[in-house]
Length: 125
Image (cartoon, rainbow, N blue to C red; front, side):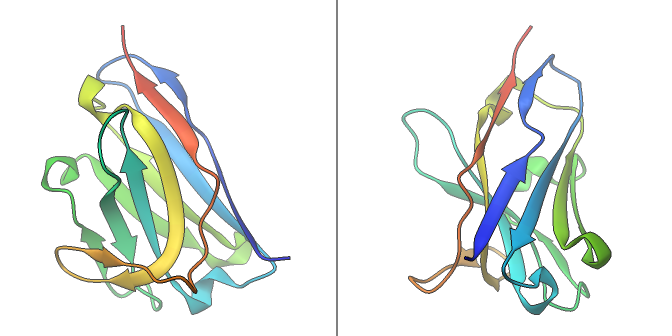
């Protein structure tokens, strides 16, 4: 059974850091471009960051996260990470990872792509 499983979310104070993990089961993540998305209450889901298959290119689709978030892969652990620093209350959302296609200003997914169940990130004092 193919699964993407996110972890690492939680409650953090503004200015704090979290590292989200996206672990693959039943598939090798190094064969896929992997995107991170988030959905805040009452808002549409938005792409945040994406890493290409070869790890040659890392995209930060959401302008506000540039310089604060970093995406990385660990192929030995079959895991993709989203390192989040200088967190703001507006970063509060459920964060999802998914297979897809990385574009400069977008992350494209189709019905054939795989999604995780999400992990909650809450930034509050």
